[in-house]
Image 1 (cartoon, rainbow, N blue to C red):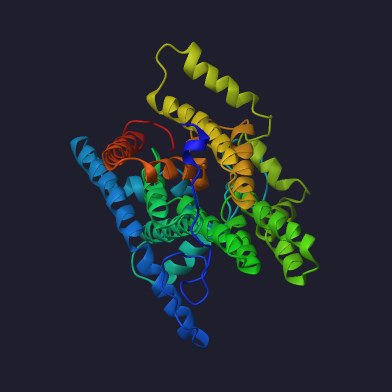
Image 2: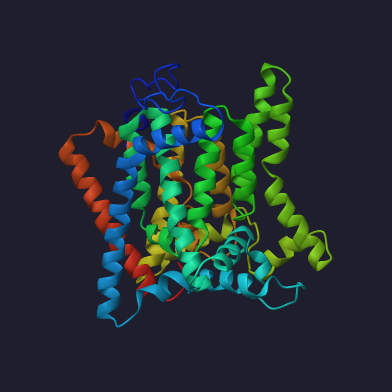
Length: 409
């Protein structure tokens, strides 16, 4: 798909005073009422505007859940344990139950300080106030956050290119091959919600809101540094128009969550590079992409019968690079390019485990803007065929990932 094919002929106005909600073309304006009333009115207006995207998101993910349930029943597996208690979910539940390790240690793949704290803290706090187990609480939080993330994805797409592109972008994000993770006890949904709304806040000029959300993203996943970089750089570049204490504060706040956790781990284990030492125990060091290239060559050129899931991961990584090039060619706004660029550098440049990398790219929804733009101008028949194939493919890949692939997604 050439990049020129995905460039819109004209973008809708980013705001229309007196006619639309700022930053959301087509949403009727709500008279600004004082305090909470005005905020709630604006939220309701945006929620009505996003309703088609959220309903489409639910339909895609429910299709995947039905496929998983049917396949799991045939294999005599339960669905709930797969979604709520396995792999990384078990690590987060362990942190919620017992807290973090106090020493670095020497055992490989065993130190829970590699996992960022916001999600397990939320699980522990909400579980203390609600009935049910912490595993159930964690899964509910993930599902709720997935809808907040889908709403944010739609907000970014609609702000840049109109409502149709916003809906298509949301559907494409829901239908990613590893989209099942959005409804598992993992951090991807929470992180994507923070990232999407931080980017939307940047695009609509709300730097302090963006920085606050970026800081929370930095407490959620290691790749939160990508959100912090996008917001901080945007804030610093805005100083070219003149001094702004607000912009300086945003630039300082955006990476604060990530820096705070990395610094805390260093204090906890008694060495300045404590967090990076933990990552080395997880075989997760920066090597400039040498391990990624080696594994790609192994999967595509050396192994005569590679695992299907590893082929899927490899194709996803290669597609992400192509989509980033198309995004740059389409001149996406700088915050989006910085976010996805840093995310790609982290994922592709790591020497760590290979098989979860498609999941690591799940929050990079701006990479899907070029195909969303192309589909928005395609014929209805072509659009229906592509989206149907994506949804069914996602349902199959999700069930395969959970039930056949023996390792973590």
